[in-house]
Image (cartoon, rainbow, N blue to C red; front, side):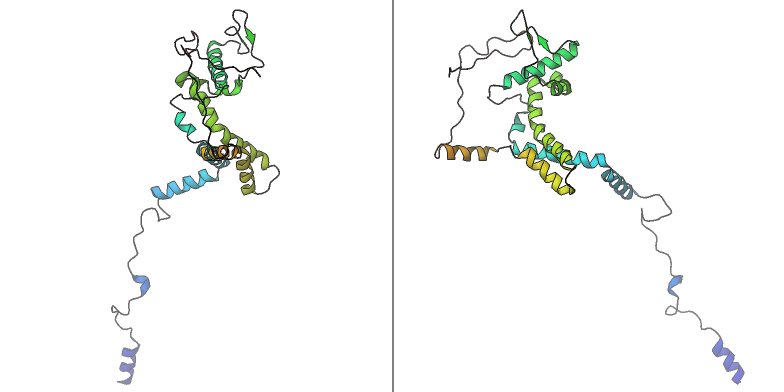
Length: 244
């Protein structure tokens, strides 16, 4: 009897709900994109692609350049509103710059010499070596000039110039400044320090004119806009000349 009782006590007890081992539970079904053995889900692939793109030097420099250009557009606001309307600031040199964009696009499409024109001092012509021609911007913006006109090319160049100056100084500062943040600050200070907002301009006018804001004066000339150039299509205008 004692030996039988000893054999029954040594026999394993039947398994119950409270005695089941934790390792024998049903495995949890993995979610999409978490199974290492299967292909990654769409969110995982996008994250990996963004990580590889952000690690590329070209992407970082492109994002920095875009940030500088956006900062320049903000500081020169509302100049960006004139981009597609072909509206130009009322200053003296604008006409020469716009004509230069049109001339470069015309000479590029005709494969002609851009350094001489017979449209000035006709029929003899004049060399354009000392003219405000800007051949490189005119060449790069030739598609814009041909599609939307030289005024849009000028406004676009004015908008992106502060950002380009910032990025150029950033690359120069990286040669001597070990900190990336310091180089970015140097580029922003160099490219954006000369940009004045309309509010700052009004404050300076009040200070210089004892509280009064002097608005630019526009003069109306007779018969302007009636005649147009036969080559570029721009209207012939006039300006007041005052002898010193």
